[in-house]
Image (cartoon, rainbow, N blue to C red; front, top):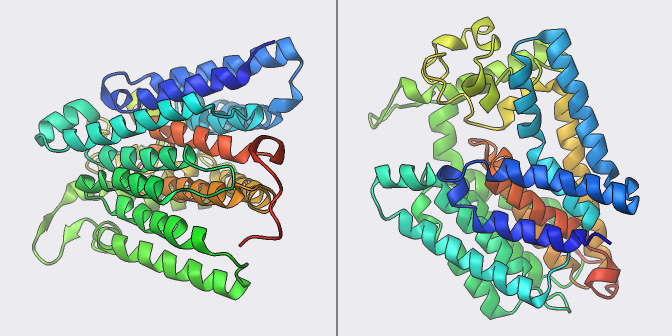
Length: 413
């Protein structure tokens, strides 16, 4: 019988080990990872008659196939090749999640040791690279933000591999996890600091709560934590979306900072004018819409004159994830929201039924909020860090009492 759980575990280990090289030196890692997962799902389905197990995967790939057909026949803003490339890019994180949820791999003690060792090496290596010149950072890991992203993923991996059978995490493991997270400080990104606020709350506050929290207290807590996240990112938000890339206090800025707000504004216009399915794959704010073949959408909305979005220099086209949802329209936004509601429902069940549920719930929400925060100003979700994060989230969402321990007593908050 095909041991899909062990194969998935080793795919995760290899993807995590290649996380830093995949940013610049070995770029096709995430595509190869996803292709391997699709091949695994097809083989398992054929050999073990497990087609139903991967129903989420088939639904996701089917929906995106319909979007691809729509993109080619109804709107035709780009070439079939660019649309095919974007089809895979947009599906990458969701394929990783769907396969890991279906397979539900569980770590052995040896797996945990390997994963924790890789997490430590990744975080230390990224922090060490940040000490070199900007040119060296760009050569090795593309951008300084990768330091913070690597630290967050290392933090999550360490915690996930440190949960005890009773659901607790030792003070030593928590301290080590936060040391790994602290190695991301050289990134200096507002997104990273926002994730740090979320992480501090879930590990140091949420996991210590013993009694169920009233809904009113839950709402108040969400407002406070959300306010803190907004506070650490306010200056960057104002810089891009209020001052439109110019430091009005005289500290610099310029036309090169207009691309991101222009993408967000155009995304809103596209969603309004292309109801309900948007402008189609490879048409807007995605790698395929600029680097593979320049989309006609940019001419239609006058973006071909914006610095960083031009045909000759499309460097900033793939600069944020949320604008790319305009490709899928309001229907795609609804599907995106529905996916996270589906994940949240799974996590709520896990929190209530597993001995380790509270710890898994906390780590999962750190991963989710990390990806949602990153998506404001990067496309991390569809890059190697996003694929690894979704594999980790898939492992958590596949947890059952049979694989993770006894039923918890009572409801947890």
